[in-house]
Structure formats: structure tokens, C-alpha cells
Length: 230
Image (tube, helix red, strand yellow):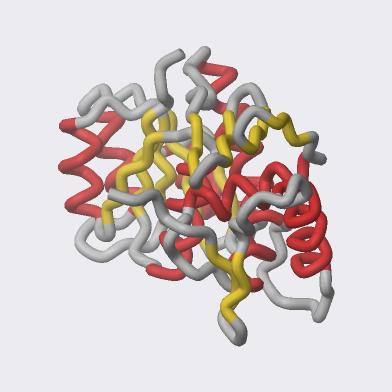
């Protein structure tokens, strides 16, 4: 199955820092533009199934960028992100050629559901069958199968999402807040211990056969998994 290519046009580094790895972990191929002019350049040169487009951008705002792409007969789907929640703003975005509209702040799960719904409507591939690998732990993101060596590991949907995010960011330290945002869709830390609880569940399942531990705690920062050697 072909990979659905996405273009993320967003100038807020905080949003890029969780959307790019999150969408990549879901099996999408993602390119990023930090301003409207670069977004226009990439959108013209790349065959993107969908463009996640911020409304307020330097250089060329999202409304202008979307309108220009439609004038140039660009057929990529457009999901517009904006802090503007007024009805007229939504109407303006849709009239400029956007296919859907999501108001900030939003949960990652909702964004993902919107993307999948738009791609289904177009008949585009939703996710690639990507194999994430850390040491002898593998994760098939399409088949939803996890294995440690030859041992198959049964995971709940939330355990799978958490493990996929950690593996997609192997070699980096991922904070609890980052995990709350990308796996649970919480844009703030409500003081819950849900991350710690699910990390414990994963460790029991992944390292339950006496294997070398793969999920490590970086005290005061978060969690990490070892990057592939090479």
C-alpha cells in the first residue's frame, strides 16, 4: 500500500514538535513548511494527499495560500487549523477551498480522525504498513502487531499508541506532557498518573520474558527508548 504524503504548514514550533512525530508514528510521510511561501513552494512541487494548513502564517497566510492553490488547480485536500473560531472565519476558509476546519486547541486524536475521514472520502491511502524497530522489538503500525523477537505481544489500543509514539521517537527523551498531548489528546497535565501506569503496563508486557529493558526513565524529563545503531 502506498504511503499517504502529508504537508504540514505551521509556524508554531510547539505544534510541529508533536504533530510531525505523531503523524509519522501513524504511518504517514510528513513534510513541514514553517511559513506560507515555503508551503506554497512545497505544495506546488509535491504530490501531497492532504495539507494541514495553519490560518495565521508569516509570508502568506493560510487563506491566501489555499486560494492560490485552488486557482492553480491543486487537488490536495486541505485541513485548515486556526485559533479563529468565528463562523465567518470558517466560511472564509471553506470558500477559499479548504475541505475541513479545526479550531485550536485540539486533541491529536481529533486531528487524526479528521485526516482519516478526508482521505477516505478521496479514496487515498490512509496509513502505510510501517514497521517500527527498536532492538528486537518490532511494531507493525498497519497490522497492529507487536513482537519481541518471535514472541507476539498483545496490546490494548492505548498501549499500542503509546508504544508506537515512543518507538517513532527512539533516541529522544519524550516528556509526560508530550505523551499526554499525543497519545491521550490532553493539552495540559491534569495531575493524572495515567502515563506512569501505562508505561508500567508496557514494561510488564515487553520485558516480561526476561529480555533487556527497552523503555527507560530519564528522571525529571520523561521516557526514552534506544535508537537503532548505525
